[in-house]
Length: 220
Image 1: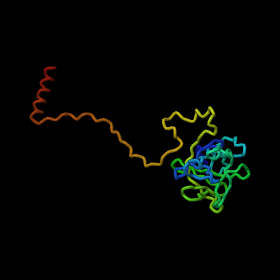
Image 2: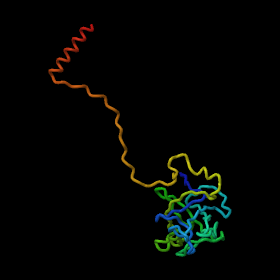
Image 3: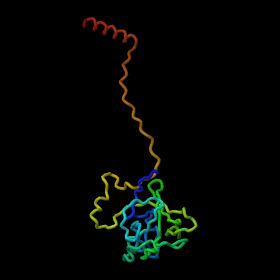
Image 4: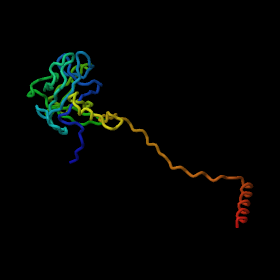
């Protein structure tokens, strides 16, 4: 069976950017939304965890369930940090819970153009709430529903020395995400051609031929 690198791993931390351009995070209204960050909205720094200890470092393949811990707390104070995204379903907003037994179980699969889609292990995950404050909920009747997003790996601990290794040696440091654009047509480079031999009018060409012939006789 062919297995490709997922580029997403358990134990690591990511931000989730929805297709509306906003990062998913906790709102003071009491639930997660993908909306403008301000004094009521703190973007989430999400650690993907196989168990409550969240120590495993392994690839996340489609169909592998995991829970999500939000390292960040609420905006303007930081309350309720390091809590789990819960298992709210069928229109109830996904929110925080300190109780691991109430944590939602998610799956992640790759989509084209550098994106992922976040679903549930036994259910789907879909949007809820108005456009200006898009939330998320588990959908029990549609197990194929998922929310497309861009994942960006970020440090779980902003003070860890290993963060110096986040940048790679390439000029493009955002190497995980790629825009999906139509490639430009290839540029064809032809090999240089030898210069064409000069041409002369018939009478001049006859004089030139005679001069060459005389020169050859003199040389002999």
